Image 1 (tube, rainbow, N blue to C red):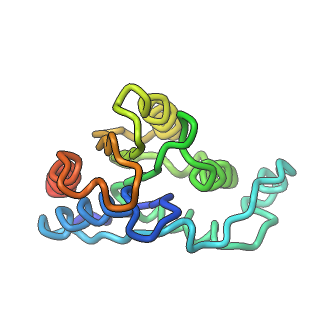
Image 2: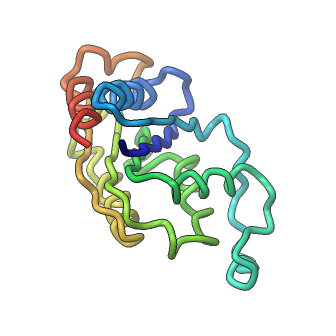
Length: 175
């Protein structure tokens, strides 16, 4: 049994990214694995201050929810990273979270990672976010195993009934 950690940067509960996260989780659990979704918008995550105290101490000076998230990332076998695309890139919540990887960035790799990327554009308009996230997670030492493209969705719930729903479920089953 594998431990799967899903980080959802969806600002809307049951938004399109969130819906695909739940589909991935459903497939994962059906395959007999353990999965947990963390809604980043439900967490207190401050901006990195670039003070680099973490280089000396191994922990961040900010005392918020990031330490728990980093613990869970380190304890997971598989990561799923989900974001809506804003102005061709990942949203600010996910970027803020990734910036806060700094205290443990050298110890966060080794996962099979899946990306869930949603937005009103087609794949071409969402691709920069996919490229950025692939490079970030591969630089940590992860293996990006797949990208689920929730393309052409904007309003809450529009992803339902799209091919991305089946792709998310099957990706979850395949781990």
